[in-house]
Image (cartoon, rainbow, N blue to C red; front, side):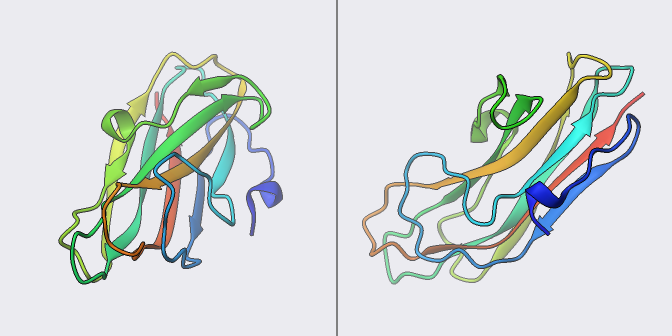
Length: 152
């Protein structure tokens, strides 16, 4: 299933996407979407608040000077061609791996998004980057997850 396959969900329903395609040997130190794109459409509930969970599996199995992998959400009004509401930032709502993990480490971060326009359509997707280590680009992603749950 791809982000384009997701159907619009009425307000009040949970939206989620899980992808376990291996993305190996990351090199980008700027946020990128990855392939396939991991994102969901959702309709903001009457409260204008949703619970966001973002996570995945990360490692760097290089011999030395290993990199960290960072995963962060990017939120748009209407679609990915719409207005960006939330820029990707690991420090605000993202998740970061430990450089010491040579085997896949799985984790997630939960946060509350508020101030959304009730009844409006939104699209949220994952973005990732790697730290600027000195190894030969051995950081990998095993899976990416995003879950949006409406809050009262």
